[in-house]
Length: 68
Image (cartoon, rainbow, N blue to C red; front, top):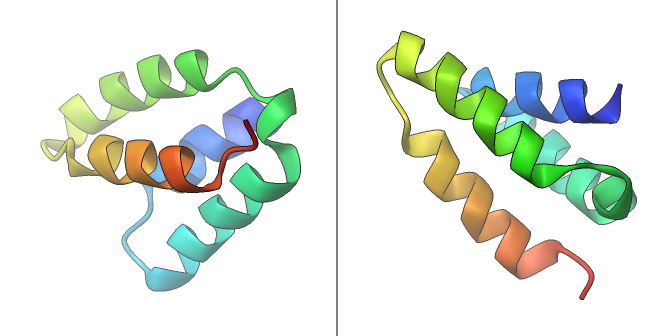
């Protein structure tokens, strides 16, 4: 469930609030989410959308916010 929410939030992240929501998901639930699955699902959806820039932004947020 959290993985699906993270994927959908990233795919529709056209508003600043969407990115804040993604940050919150990373901070609160990062260890519970399979981020490889999110990236794979997100990549497929973004290809259809014609804009894959959200993948780079997600990677930046994960690098900065994920617990080590």
